[in-house]
Length: 399
Ligand code: MLT
Image (tube, rainbow, N blue to C red; front, top):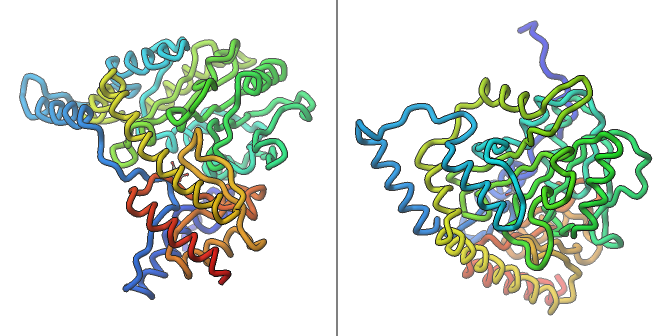
């Protein structure tokens, strides 16, 4: 028997990560019912192929890697300048200034969300509920004190700092929110930035779904004055450009983020990445760069539009069967209230057993998600139509 010590904080975690748990249940169901066609509208994984301009850039880059004169070894750990510049220019399109030097390219928003805790000490962390479970899990792993900011139907799933008493927090904000699709307007985000500046807090802003925003809402926390003094932003090519399998994202850590004691978060993040990360491959970064050209943005917007049409199909079905829902407008997710007073895992089993549809139980996004359920619009059109037809028939059958 080994005598080493382990990170006992892991015992505070649930047995499995939410989407692993769902995967396990679905595999078990499929093994027991090999003849049934299961439709997966659970994890938010894209199904459309990469945009042509992205594929072309990646092919070209892969060929360069096969030629002595253009071959490249280790990529810079913070990302190639060409991609950092392209991301900075992408912000500029929305009138937001983010210097290329403050942008750190990575292999995913999930990695950045999970890793950022490395440079932070023992703070109290404020996490919205319901929200993407990685915020909670990575802070549990670090043994941090966690407070939940519960949001619900009455506040449009948009928590505010109104009832906070000025305590210093690390505050997580996800807008558009995963799973509810709720989006902060400028006044809503400004309230958070003002709170952070006054209380000496740090905001970790997850904008992974910004490409889905419809209407005049901020796409970045840096749209708000003063955010560069209190916020880190994490964004990803996964959902905006279909990179879930290709892997590329970025994290903005402004040079102006300084803590008492003279610590620069940018310097610390640079140091952390240089030590623990070896960058994203050259062909992938060229593909990401291509996704941010005019042509790339147009082609990727067509992918987003396709998914939003799926969202509309799901939303129309729910309206017909009289199920309350929100989201599906500035977000690829539909957040619905479980019918017949079912708990979210009961509804998960009910849908899988009776209609062979996989969704995500709201409880997996935090206690405030109990009684709700998330469906993703990232499926194929064909599967979305089939799944909604099954859902409608099931809910109308009264089973
Ligand atoms: C989700 O389904 O919430 C996301 O796809 C998970 C992720 O982005 O890691």
